[in-house]
Length: 306
Image 1: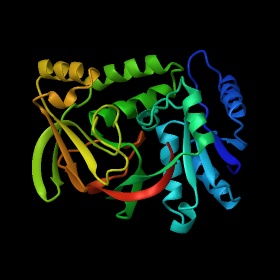
Image 2 (image 1 turned 45 degrees about the horizontal axis):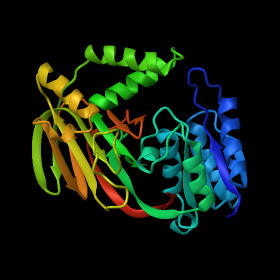
Image 3 (image 1 turned 90 degrees about the vertical axis):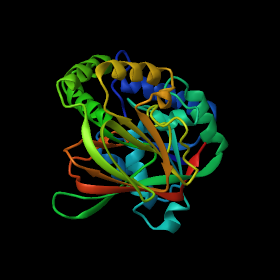
């Protein structure tokens, strides 16, 4: 295999320094004789810049040592270059983020470096789909944001935004997540939305809508990144007793069995918020969405190490 470009995105976890974490990753890379050049990303805005730098320097294998958000930045960079360039590049991941849901779909985990790095060494490749959110921003400009994992609309998007805000002042992921849940209870937890799924229109008060190409943090357990379809799970508003019942089913991986949950599968989905609602794409808040937006699939656009 050609020399890989590894973009290392440090994550500050309790009792684990970024330097020690990289040394563990490097040791496994050496074990499997993976030749690589590493650059470190210091902030979110630098991931796309570093991916473009690696493309311009002729690297054909780009590995993100990071989480869902960093992987999302890499995919958005690849989707904005010429198709012939994109088709010549293979994307890989070493789980190293706060959330590694897309990596988990392929059996990779933060604590098991061997599996993901062995796959990189063996260079097993599969073409996968990319989801796309098309929307209008506050300046009335048409925008698009690509994703591998999911779009969350409502409660989970609110929790992810609160978690990011609390992490700025709290070192602990666990503490910040717990505080986010408490703060979430003080915010609105249901929203009125209209959505069109393959020309079928519905309107409901919802707690969360997840549109996904993978696990969707457990919201879309049957979605796959190579089906050419989107899975959508709508959690409709309910009384608190039903809310806690839904949480229990969610933790058991049986959320779709809840009577207030509706699953859909489609090639294109249009969402119109009737009340103000938070939107999050692979962990990145979309703060500038105005009005309706459409989610669709670009089939087999990325070569991915599996």
